[in-house]
Image (cartoon, rainbow, N blue to C red; front, side, top):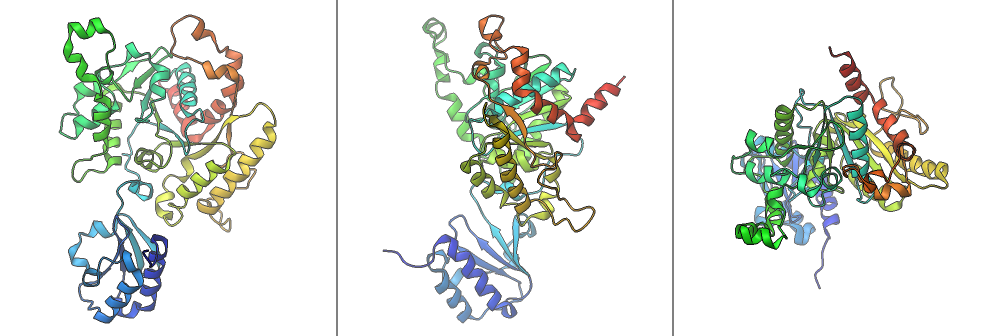
Length: 443
């Protein structure tokens, strides 16, 4: 049986060791943790660490030591950005630099250009909460307000907005996964950008779906007989999806998404972009939530699973005040699928849970006038939930259905009862209200 410290113990042991020997290590010590959790100590080029200290740290770390001979590394072996991009301050002069296979973007600064089109990002720590349905409802309402809306389906593993806004035969040739595959080899041109967006039946709403027709298997035997090459589409989407996150050398995934959005905004000229993000702590969400410069709607239910997930996520921002300051005022909680009975009590529990989360990781002490701090019952606070009320009729809502029985399953009154408070709350957010006001003032 293996013995020694676990992953969680190793960092505490390394930090304790660094505190104990700060005088010998010099200024700005970096604990570099590799993808396996093994920890090296990066010291200044002029620092000579006695062999006895290397042996001591190696023994403490056990299997999370890279070996006594390589446990110390001089700073000269690293480019400056390698030790500054993702570092977290653990103690005075002691930093942690984590090398991760994925999820690296949660603690990085936004990448959105200042001139980007207004964006609203839909995110949930768990799926199945009606996030995509709410996005379609907002797209519908914004289009009714006279805005040209672009919906980008970034939920690539489980496209939701795509199927709600477009029938299968309405899909464009290409989807978002095609852009990532083509971009990797320098083929993400304007022809591709034009070929991945089509109008929906829901007002002035354009859709960039996750998947295009070239990735959809053909089941019609007569069609396959006419063109046997169509059989090559079988499994094509999985083949593309499996290459989506393989960014070219030197390209961050968030930067690639930003280039995609900037290209779509330039070619199709929307007035607002709605992004349906992947649920959970996924690489797409790590780019969309903190880094793309939009209002972020955080979908939640009053369940322990939801708040554990958000707590794990928000803790990544706890030490990154400079990063979180850039987007914290754009966060807003959404109470998803509020039940038909006991609504006030449900919303009260959700409000308390959201407040505890924000107070623990985002809000500041209220000692100064400009502190980012809110009372638990402040209706304008980021933690105050915008409610979406569950209704049986919405389960079968098909907003893009052609005229017929499916298109008539939800009446205007039922739609307003479910989404009205949420839509009014979103439209009143400063970011969105300014957009609507500027559109009204346009000649």
